[in-house]
Image (cartoon, rainbow, N blue to C red; front, side):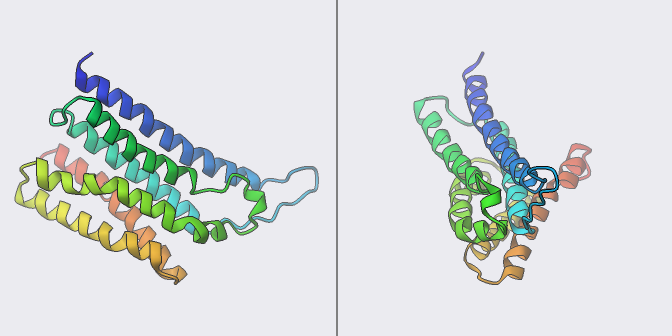
Amino acid sequence: MSGNDFLFSLFTLLLGFILIEVLSGLMRTLRARLPSGPGVRVDIHIGWLTPLLGIYTMLNVLLWWGTLWGMLGILPVGYDTMTIGLILCSLFYFAASMIFPDDARAWPDVDEWFWMHRRLVLGCILGANLPLMLEPFVLEKLGTSELVVNAVVVSSQLLLLPLAMYSRMKWLVTAALTSLVAIHLSFIPLDFLHRHGVW
């Protein structure tokens, strides 16, 4: 096993745990809506905000994972690299663990949990993403189209994340999170076109 393989296996493990944390929180919250016994109805409102935050986090972790794979030939292997990676993954993991409440039945409206913790969650995600945002401009030689796409994606995230963190208007926060999810999903057709030499 090469040093790069060793480094990637470590981060793969950590990033996999982050995805599991978000998915288990989502499943735990959805299960809380099921009847707790025969004829016992549980009235829990989940809304859109918390699921959107969970979806955005998972898509962002996937983007981070893919970028890390592309950086393997550039990153030096050492204790410093592992420590920085651990710190960034810890920010992601903490954010993932705070998206859904541990006991959803204690929160009849899960959106209330979102409003209490959104700044902390999104702040951690933004902190973990800053190196990812800078990496294409610092470590790579980009073509014009790649430079434009990266600039649009980074500037959009730097606008939308603080908007989702600090706006008090529900529709604006929902729109910001939906846009962040849409930006990440836009990489699916872009990757397909790039793979086939169209873009």
